[in-house]
Length: 322
Image 1: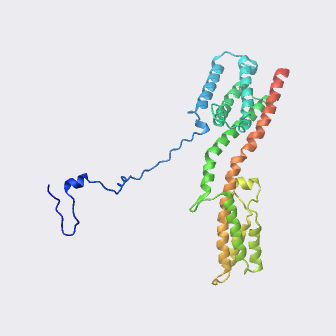
Image 2 (image 1 turned 180 degrees about the vertical axis):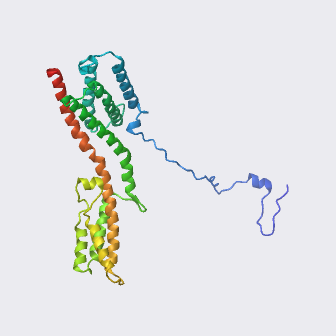
Image 3 (image 1 turned 135 degrees about the vertical axis):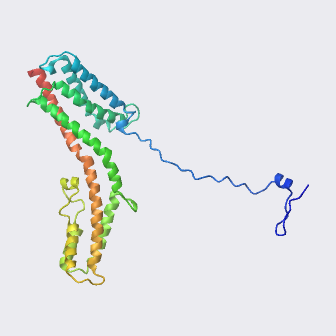
């Protein structure tokens, strides 16, 4: 059996047969696996597309059927609301309005299944839009200055505010999340407040060598409440009386007319106030977005109760005074 040739610097070599049949005590290395890329697949299903838009399809069919009835079924030209179709539409509309108001109660009991909160919200949205057809056809396009038209108008305000609420929840949470991220990562509202407090401490220490007039300007910034401002300030994000911006502007004006010196404390104060302005702007954008997420409810909910009151007056007046 021929041996495998070896050179002077090599150790004893095994024969080809021995090498093939020999065993080793060293555990074999596992095959090197290539880097597996895991793409994140989102399985989130929003309430607008719940079950492939089941309630959108149901609502569209219902609206189309009612429009067809209104067009093709012979009905009296006057007092359409008192016809059989008018009463049917009025009953359907009233029951829908009462059912739609139950979403607030449904939110307190989150359960899976056919009538999960997501399914209920999807039905709330699309059946609420169907009310435009139901209510308008019920009126027979007969509008006047009376309680009947008032009920229709309040219904439209509720629906329009609801549409705005859908837009708010579809767009603002992403903007709210983006506002929380910077080059250092995410920051919470609590961390924003802590950053402002830390900057205030640094500004307070750096302002000790300032003259009384400059120190008074800095003191206004330190005394400023970051949550100050009325509802208009919050939803617009505009704070024309911002003490920090005013202090920074006045100090820059004063410094422009003074000779530059080394280690000028005003330079450090200016840098700190600039950082505080940026953090205040970030927090105020955060408050603005949160306010928009809540503001539409201040219209949607109270007008809903006004609608129920007008609807009750409409029903009473129809059955007792029509």
